[in-house]
Image 1 (cartoon, rainbow, N blue to C red):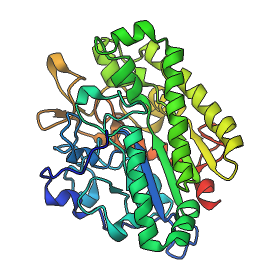
Image 2 (image 1 turned 135 degrees about the vertical axis):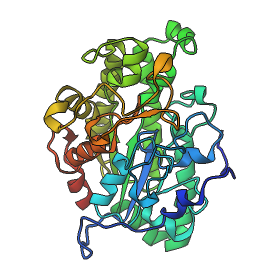
Image 3 (image 1 turned 30 degrees about the vertical axis):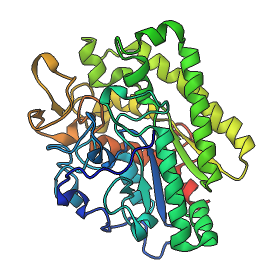
Length: 376
């Protein structure tokens, strides 16, 4: 079911910055600078859409956003202390402004030309994913919303220019899949019956089948440059360590095995099947799993103090379970934590991951990095 824009109160400063421009790494005369970024996914890249939903999955309260300079440290709906990976990638590829959240009041007119963010905390590839949060935008709904945006581009630029703008000057980023395991297949009680009748192989098949159709829908609306992230080692996040009472070096084996199973199928979908069937499209497979695992295992080499403790966390019996909020305890040095909260990386970690995606080699990004993808 498609959700309409809601008129929930959001402080004015949350969307004041959305249309503002930021300093660009690429030079002003760079003809290859990214024109627009279209972001699809979950809370890892949500830029504030959930602020406008009646949902339990929100990040619109302090100290979230404390290091996000455009909002002067006020929360924007990003599930981290600063910028998301999508924000950083867009900046460094020359995108003039952040992609506006689709549900934001000013997501219209020329503001759309820098791109649109459809990502939603709690969202997944499958429509049933995230039902524990009441409301969220699943991938199907996010693609439905892009259908509306696509028609708006034709009105803004004319059909021919809009097609060229989207095919050649825009990047489509998809960061989704973790919630399909964490808030669907692995949810105690909620999904217990499903697991009795649906093996991991069948569940992953269902995810890949849905994602295939979603990517093809975007292709049919002129998306040509894709970067698709695989699922991170979700068995190693602070939330999983807490509920399973693991020590710093332990991870939940089942969760990581499910992620790896899905990741292998995703790579085959992108690098073989869609590469052969959609010959004028370019698909980049972002190996987020190995990127995160490298950070978690070698965190000291990257200057972090811990990869197991969240910077913003709840103490006591519910430690590692409740989201970051006003009553949470905050660490003294946010740059020393791989994780901002029990689920999401800090801006410091996002910067390192984005850098590998932008300029790294085939170990972490295949068949080429995002700088190369932009310049095709």
